[in-house]
Amino acid sequence: MLTTTSVTWLDLLCLTGVATVGIYLVKQTFVLKKNLAPYPPGPRGWPLIGNILDMPRTKPWLTFTEWGQKYGDITHIEVQGRHIIVLNSVKTAMEMMDSKSTLYSDRPVIPMAGELVGWKDSLPLLPYGDRFRLYRRNFHQVIGTRAAVDVYNVIEEVETHRFLKRVLANPDRLQEHVQHTAGAVIFRISHGYEVEEDNDPLVDRADRVITHGSQALAPGAFMVDIVPFLAKVPAWFPGAGFKRTAREWREALEEIVSASHKFVKDQMVAGIAPVSFTSSLLKGGDVSAEEDHVAKWSAFSLYTGGADTTLSSIYSLFLAMTLFPDVQKKAQAEIDAVIGPDRLPSLADRESLPYIEALVKEVLRWHVTVPTGVPHCVTEDDIHDGYYIPKGSLIMPNIWFMLNDPRTYANPSQFNPERFLAKDGKEPETEPQKICFGFGRRICPGRHLADASIWISTVMSLAVFDISKVVENGVEITPEVEPLSGTVSHSKPFKCSIKPRSLTALGLIEQDANY
Image 1 (cartoon, rainbow, N blue to C red):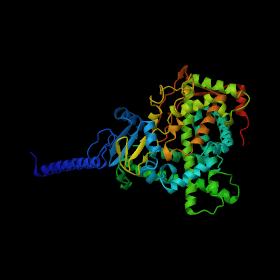
Image 2 (image 1 turned 90 degrees about the vertical axis):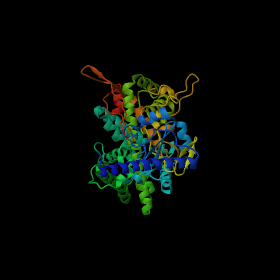
Image 3 (image 1 turned 60 degrees about the vertical axis):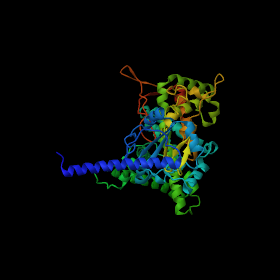
Image 4 (image 1 turned 30 degrees about the vertical axis):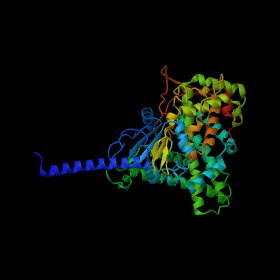
């Protein structure tokens, strides 16, 4: 038998539920009448909590792809009052984020990565405005065009030659070597810092904070990004372990940003600073606190934007060559025919190697480095394709699906560089660089530098190494293709055999690799 107290609580719960549903329906009706357009279709949410249970915590691009197949190219969900719009086609992404870039170029507040860890001052999370434009102008002056990036060709080539030496000496540490080289190239350009041969303390610390940043930015990885008021919960509160994690990550981030900036300033005072991104911005030394802040974070944004993504692409190149030996043989045949056996390729050879160019494009398409990009934010209400896009909505391009969309790429699961070569009157398929580096005014400003790094690593590695599957106890080991979660997605670690192609190739590797 129910007591008076229990009936009262049941009544209150019912009233609360009815009120919540009522408020939700009134709100939806008001929005539809006001804007004369519906939200885009998407998974049906619950009153009060919306689609909080639908938000994926790992590999969100796969869930977003399922939504696209069910609801179309524009999908909508609502989580705690925040509207999230997922885009599943290149056409829609271009129409919204390129053609309407004045509306779609802001960044949302991301509680974990931006506010708690402290990445809000880096270019990827910077709000659209004057400081953002200043950062972008700094980038454009130094690496904004292929011609500007050509200045750093010697750095790229020498560091990649050193990479070949490290791989030859310890092929089992491939991922470590790729990471070291990516960091060496970017740090040299951003801060004029020449890394140590092994276990460089600055690179090691920088790579750790980049990993933290990728984890903090991954969609759905931290509940505080879905329920922002959790940021106010004290660190000792049960379930608030993310606050302690954020504090540790923030300290590491602030330390490396300040240490790398101080390195340049100390060298400038001593009169021994080489030309770098940072030294160029600080030229003369008489800069305001704001200019110093912009220089410090612009330079570190250059490092973070290039090192991890380049690592991801080059490591996946070795995976692809392990799995697709026929592609490797075609690439090596072109190198042998154009370059010959007596020297290493250089960036000056790029125009003469169309198959290598196509191979690099296919690596960018096949392993999607940033599968869902970094969310854009809408600054004003918009009606697009008949759908209402409210001010403040998060816009998430499903770049992974765009690069695996059978409407754009024939047999997308197949690794096929020839899709990017004109053949038998057939036009090449869409270049992945138009997709993988983002859209509109938020397109990656370091894309030309990243593209050059991946190209030179590809052509030099294939010129001197044969890459194949490892044989253990008489059994050939086939690596697993599994992209890992994170804002920057890496291939799952794998084993492969890396051996010099010939004694001549061995001699090229062992030559001096100096500036």
